[in-house]
Image (cartoon, rainbow, N blue to C red):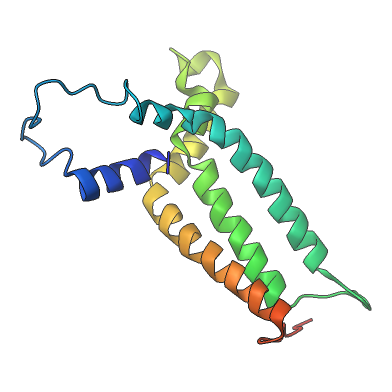
Length: 161
């Protein structure tokens, strides 16, 4: 909910704010995100660290999914979980907050070439942030459904390798 992309989407959808590109604000005392409850949006940069931790847990799940009772293997569930990690990583590593951490504080990139490379990498992912957001959102739902239905015995996780 605190992602900059999602903020823009639901601000426009639910509050029609901003109403259009060159249209002024309909109110005279607009405080933006400086008053409650919108000031809570500023926790976004802290949720980034939590998201990075979740990526580690999800990557560990993929590692565990590679090992069957009789040894190494790849199943459909392994691929579903791996795609989940890739899409969430693309979304997380393209985050505006991570971009700021990587190089947003620098005045001159020439003084920190490693930060510049990290900044451009995050910027590359950030250009498609909306695509990463939607793909990861729907894939997380599908991955959860897949695991749940396999656990219930409704679906069978086919082993490919």
